[in-house]
Length: 293
Length: 227
Image (cartoon, rainbow over all chains, first blue to last red; front, top):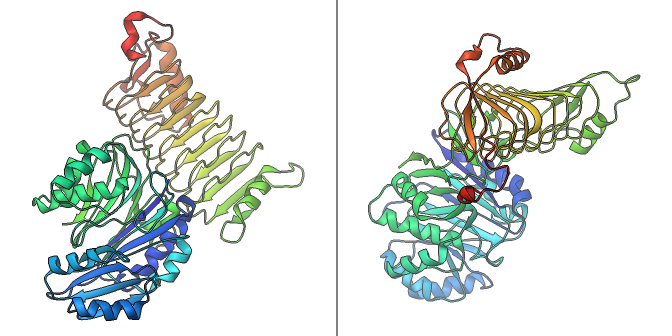
């Protein structure tokens, strides 16, 4: 199973309500995924600054803050439950290599505008713990997980991010992920888990770094990724959905003049403002639907 | 009588509709705020009229006998699945597997139905005013599937004795499904069903009939690649 949700705002009207809108969607999708939940939210970027979303696990925040200040020059580090958002103007490659060496933490995402929070537990508790309702932003993607092919851990939770400002959520299962992972490792994509979705995220990062746009990337994914899937993916200014050709995994899109909302089931968006007059349709199998770049 | 799913639990609403006393209860019901909930109006057995004001989730009207259900919105997966009799009218679009395994009754979809519409249907009549997705009427056994728009890939794959009538284009036919001659008997049947769906204006001659070539019924070594 698994539940996937996403909102892309076409106007500024709901920017302040984005977290609240996504929160209701995630809580509703508990029925499809009670094991873990997570979300990626895109905010306005600050010039020259990169943000790193870090799950600090069992570390004491104050101690982590003190230790990290010796290694990285940062502008701010903000605690949100067991996650922290570190903002820095230092070279991202340098920061990433430092953070990746700290075994006690998990780097869950980084970029100019993305923030990612994900944790095991019931979606209702996860969104409450991270105070998702208070978030504002331009677009957001979320996931509720019913674990199938790998363990219930933070690293096994979605969204997956394998590149700057990129994220992916997935409902389904891939059957050729081991081969693809080996191929992508040769192309210097790093993986943190045994999860199939992380491989799809790596595939997307690899294609985007080769200057392909999001739509082209997902179109080539249709022929290279084998299995069942509905993917929602986000980039700094883009948002897209694709379903495999068999289309066993569901998705519904609601589009109004102010937003595009996507969910596994309509019930997850029944609370959204103006949804009853929205254009509601199912994405067709094997066709990429994208907004922004 | 109005049943508001914002105030009442789904189980209470379904129990009310499943235990009608024809002497005491009225026959008209309206369900408010369905909000995409699953299994609304399942297992009904009485001849009652129900209007659902909004979009419904999975399996709406499943196993229906006798009830007349109108959905003023879209329907999720498996609307009217295993329906035995009665009528279900979806005023919006229907998701995949509409009318799956249904033995009887009448299902009308004003919009499109997505993949696997009428999968394993066993006697139901389905009229889709829009188009249907891939693998529609897969392993369909009996009944009629009428599509006023187009049909997706592999229409009627491995079907038995269902008649399929398509007005638009068929992307591809599934294994053992072929176009068949439309004789008077079929034209009359189609006319009757179009009338029942209030589509008298459509001309029966614009439809093409598809059905089983009956080559997969018995094992033949020449067909081994198709089994």
